[in-house]
Image (tube, rainbow, N blue to C red; front, side, top):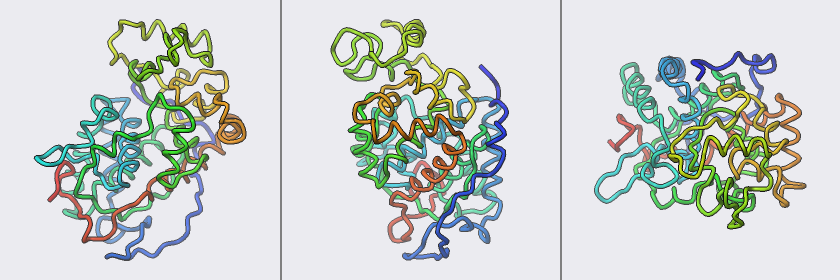
Length: 340
């Protein structure tokens, strides 16, 4: 396993320009998210989080992909409010314990370390929800991907929604279900395809290949046959990695070509039926994909610049899912695992 990401491509060296409507940073119930939210109160916040992530990556090459997944799983459940980070307490079961997160969501300790460093520098200022947003941008950029202006000013919610997390987009779902879940949080097909591109780095457990009743390798849709959309050579490789009796926690590269680099190979893999997850290949191979998501996959496979620009904008769009900005509804937690 490589100890660091591969050098970024020439197209990734330039900052991706994302046009976002200018928003005046106001504090209080009318607050809006903006890039310079901590300019006066914690001007080194970004650099502090970055140093924590760089140090964490020295011993954990997977951490960048894990952190962006935390942000994704947080925002899709009652908005980007750091609800995923809360531990279970009497009367409230944590989202961490739900099947989509338990045993697979990771990186909490790194978020804790970033929060501790920020509390030392500027106590009670930077929210845990904003740490997830900042860490996601840094993780992508340090892996060779685009950078973007992270909009900040979220407060942390005070509840965790275990039941809501049961409806997170799943690796074995068809395109219709994925489109519904993205639409429910205000995201469109471009967002779906672009954000799925985060699977261009990181690892996944064997159990996610054969999740639920849709066993891709051995009993696809109850047919006792493999998924017909899966490239035969890739299927043989995965069968060796994930035999029927293997431990479900065995890890595999989501992108077998450049597993630790943020690039557009996720889409070129899908183009040749090498999408690791059912949800990945559905974007191209589903009958419903023609005229909807398949042309977007084609565009991103043909242009890394196009993917990077759309991914940056879609991350901003996702970060705007129901952020808490009203102090009567949220707070800046001093510990990301519990309310103040």
